Amino acid sequence: MKLSDNKATLSFSNGAPSIDLPVYSGTMGPDVIDIRKLYAQTGMFTYDPGFMATAACQSGITYIDGDKGELLYRGYPIEELAVNCDFLDICYLILNGERPDEQQKLDFDHQVTHHTMVNEQMHFFLRGFRRDAHPMAVLTGLVGGLSAFYHDSTDITNPRHRHISAIRLIAKMPTLVAMAYKYSVGQPFIYPRNDLSYTGNFLRMMFATPCDEYKVNPVVERALDRIFILHADHEQNASTSTVRLCGSSGTNPFAAIAAGVACLWGPAHGGANEACLNMLEEIQAQGGVAKVGEFMEKVKDKNSGVRLMGFGHRVYKNYDPRAKLMQQTCKEVLESLGLENDPLFKLAMELERIALEDPYFVDRKLYPNVDFYSGIVQRAIGIPTSLFTAIFALARTVGWIAQWNEMLSDPEYKIGRPRQLFNGFPTRSMK
Ligand code: ACO
Image (tube, rainbow, N blue to C red; front, side):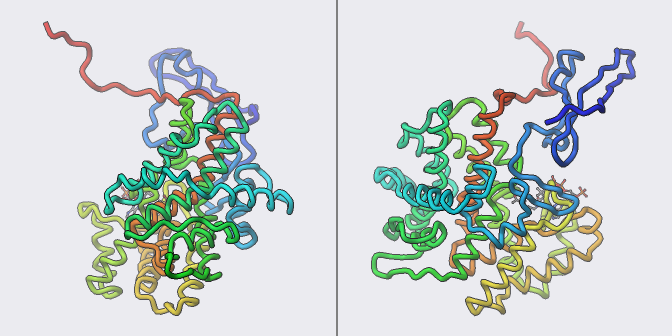
């Protein structure tokens, strides 16, 4: 970051002396006011619940312009990356800052592919869960549990350990998600195969059984790969900030990523695609497109507590560029699987059409987010609704680990320790 010529002056109405605060500029996006010395100089904190106007770190990984509806990974627009790269290209780019050349790509793919197996003991660990456990409960436990199985890559001060743990997490997440799924349906675990792509291998671990070989459908493989690409990183969102905060204490990467998985589970974040599909199914059960108007009235009634899931975003105040790509993928997958008349897709299109014209949504700048269509794609592929957030976690792992790594390499890195405005009892006595 660069110190700007501009500076901010903070003045007080009570006659206390005003202070100057430095302003820094990044390469794009809003400048920031540096308030680190504010408490020392004034005895005051800033108050910003929900981090509405607070940059908690500097980062060079992902850039979002929410007003333009722009998303860049390492400077490249998501629209270009989604059509020219596979997910492992994106992982390399996000982790290393540049796209891989041919040899780097071969090496990286080889490394990830050859770390997809998990310690056999993990199978016994998994068997401790109830069969009906939510996959995100299982995944939170399994990812945290990795730190008990891979002691040899938990020294966070050792760059080699950090690299190995990054590869291990990216490589093993599909295996863990597929294991959680197989366990929930009572089928045997399917071991990874090294002759398949990252996404093809995941599909096979999900859908093959020892009795039936699974042939990877390239349209489905490409669609799921795109879901992974679109979810790979998203700047300082809630789960990424959780990973950073958790990792800032110096904990090991598996523990920090498990914290991210737990945060992602919430319906306002990664759980939205599951909530969105449940919402579509509920409207469909009540009468489908004919009931859309009635449902929208409930959404607009603040007392109903109903939200249009898959709509709205803290940062995008324009169409989420990932939603556009997802809508296109949704059409392709449904056509290729002969499901072009899928009633939920029709319902989603109708909800979107009405919302984009309705002043309630227009005035609040509420547009579809990536989750609005991703659930329909996953459902068409055969992924159960309860597994959607686990798929999101699989894809976001690379973003979490890159952001964690970036934090540890930042000379300004400190343990995260927010302050508070205390409004409880002032000192009192039991006497
Ligand atoms: N349906 C109806 N109204 C909404 C919605 C929605 N989905 N989202 C926001 N609003 C309304 C709010 O009621 C509020 O109205 P008001 O100004 O009259 O009080 C206004 O729009 C602003 O909304 P906030 O909740 O203050 O915005 P915030 O930035 O805090 O929330 C969030 C963003 C949580 C994503 C919200 O839009 C939401 O709950 N959406 C549905 C869940 C969802 O799809 N989450 C996925 C996010 S993307 C991701 O994690 C990959």
